[in-house]
Image (cartoon, rainbow, N blue to C red; front, side):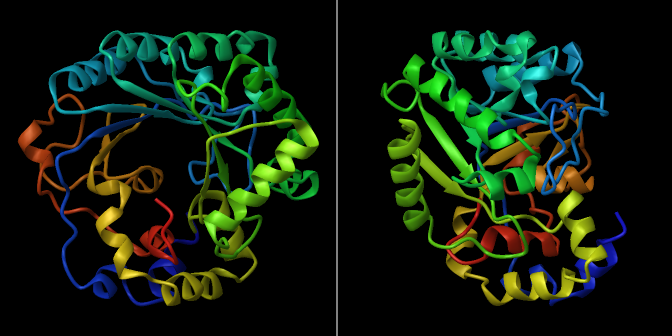
Length: 316
């Protein structure tokens, strides 16, 4: 993480800009980052996943996570990675959470469903009414392939068409949400405007329907952070994020009511803190020793990457 010094020194500390401690509420979403394995190696990936990574959640950790989901006040299970579909515990988690009647979200890069080993997963998700949050960095080939690799755009379009055929984005019970990421060191334009363009382009050109578009600002960590450092863009990008700080976004930050669990059971305030190895505040740091009272009112740990989620209209 050669960029960390620049990240910390580029602009005023995030905590000073906010001016008060950010305290966690009663957590409602249990987010599990279950693997670093991925069939892609995207340039903006904050957890630096790739086909060469093999870290994966053990069943013991998955079972403990399901105990917390059952016994605490969580309403939603959010599964991410990596390509979470490649994890050995993926279907176990979904089946178990489904049996509890919990809302389930899975993050997906879409292209994994073109692999013969994982082609059954869309039907598996449909049967359990799992919400799919799918990455599609842009609605055109060149910019998408620039971020995620040659051929990824058309592979993604093929999968989206299959999902729509299954009813995703069309049946009210089968939610399909897309995620937009800029291809460089910029803050996304209006989410509403982008969603309207995505909706028109994808429908008119590919007959694809979806429910919502989430516009995400790239976090200056992981591979994107390394690129910012190498290209001498860290100062400029952090300044842009800092200048766009919107205090109204703080009360809606995802970290306030989400507990993020890494594949090894360590606990974090969010997936970005997870990527940086920043565990939650307090004496109990893992899924095996945490107590419910440890979570409510704890101080959220922040650093300058947190400007990502508070720039403009927010990205959390």
